[in-house]
Length: 394
Image (cartoon, rainbow, N blue to C red; front, side, top):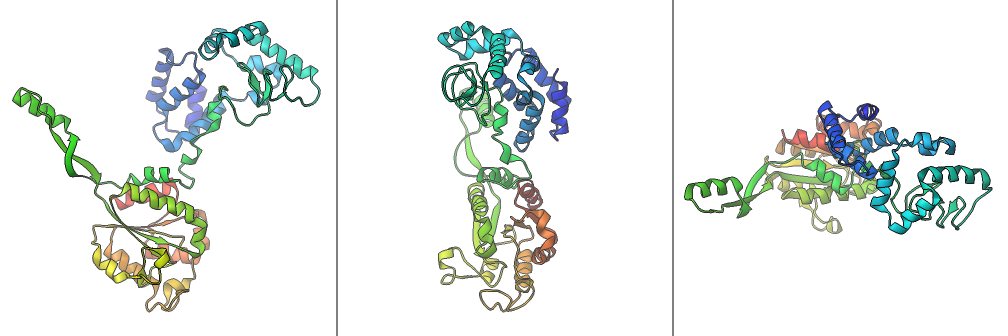
């Protein structure tokens, strides 16, 4: 009965293996979630999804396989909801009080509930608010929206108030984790984890289990050994475009910056506007009074740093190609010269662009920067940043 679900997952682009599918069937056979619909959803998701980027696709495939009651009429509900009666009774025992179960028994159980729903759909004319019988909003009727009944049928309501409905997957809590969407801080951290080189540093206060076992066996008594914690030893220098057209991307760049500061212990950052020139700065409030010569930055940080530029690369082509082309000051040398110097100093470099990749070809300056960086430009999506981190880590 679950084979169509397995096929839906594969059709949605989720790489579910036969081994994972059989593991899911074993869990069902063992009775892990026999009377728990929400548990069934989480069991299936845990066993068959190994990459959090695919959670939204899983939710959609799950909904496609197990939902659809809203599209059928009341006469078809009993046929569509093919649930064993003992399942419903066990579910009621788990979630309902004695008083609530008594109310349902008085109504006549699930079959009577469906029959009453069909009758009231025929009898009722117009909208109803409150009360305990008609289909409407609020109240305690088993049918309607924004009310409460322990075994009700939700009609015309976009979300669940009490989260009792079996379709928890329609909340799609992880829809922003699809690898084609723009990112939040948490998701960026997931992508940045691709750029890691572990090293142990600091005080010895992490338990070294293997050494403890070895030392205990050698000495005949418990000999606890510790070691320094592991830290990401990658060094990163970050250049952030600020102002102008980048104002449209402030939030996502802030999220990237926050994630980078959290992920990389060795991180240096500088701001620039549109293109890299002879001066950069650390504090935007003092961008004119505390300018740092770019040549000094090039001398300070060695080639072991990974260099990342973040900007939309959207500007006048003159700002890249000609002296005096900058729109805020007279630049003695073209921006291209400074970008090439940065690339030469930091061989591992990358440009992250918040402009959607499908639009790059329509902006001349983006194509010019891509040429300077020899194609090392990625979009600011989960997939794009992961791709960039893999390239930097080579």
